[in-house]
Image 1 (cartoon, helix red, strand yellow):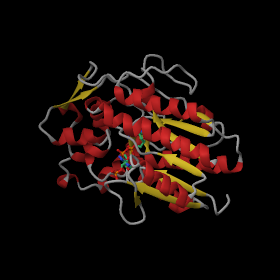
Image 2 (tube, protein in one colour):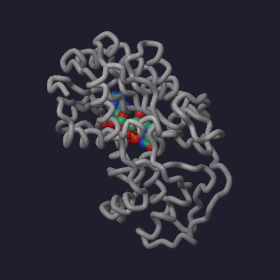
Image 3 (cartoon, protein in one colour):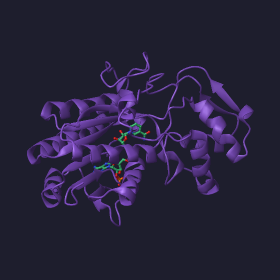
Length: 304
Ligand code: NAP
């Protein structure tokens, strides 16, 4: 790793971006810089990615050789309600970053989602046909496509539902379940969609290993998947988390039908074999990791 090579991490105030920053702070040998927006403070620089001139000036100042683009609108319900803001952040910003990377000879690592698939034919390999069911998935797939139109010096990393150190329970779709359980019981939880909760620390490690690999090998590029390897419905996740809150699993009703509202795929199991074959990664156990996180979270003071 050339110490002068800078990595830029967008979305560094977000759930995943914070974990990437932490991993890089511990183990990365090169220079790195993180940017966020409304929550930026301390070492994380404030940069509105919608401000094209500001982004260009930032690029000029920092000359990043590698860009990990984690910032996005990642909530399917919000995307459905505000498609134009979602498109601006998830697609237009991505296209702008790809063009800047192309112009400056930089490599772009774009974080994408399992929701680019329709969930009818798991498990999914990176080359399998995409067919997003909701606007969020469509916008993230459009982000992948605009990059591929601009240049080929990129990697796309698709990941499923994420959890990790949270600033508040609603920050992750996994710990949002805890908020439901804090309401009146019995709680009703989706037992139809199969998810693969994936710890942001494990994804952060993959991101660093991908940057290190690209630093050593200019040809390292393409579409990759990384996923936790334990399948859970939201109901099953709730039953893992309930005892930590002193709640009985019998007080949680398993809903066998797809959730109403924004359409979601049933099972988008991502095959991580490509990265595993490079001896990349780590998949920690969901029950152990979530217990650890919830025990360190002051659940009494959490209302959102
Ligand atoms: P997140 O916690 O919602 O964080 C979003 C990040 O984007 C924040 O750092 C936010 O900054 C930043 N951002 C929003 N608007 C911005 C703007 N105008 N300018 C600059 N930055 C802006 O998201 P996440 O969960 O970490 O998701 C990271 C990536 O993983 C995304 O690409 C997402 O699509 C993908 N992904 C996430 C999940 C999941 O379950 N979370 C699942 C699959 C894929 P401020 O907060 O400082 O405003």
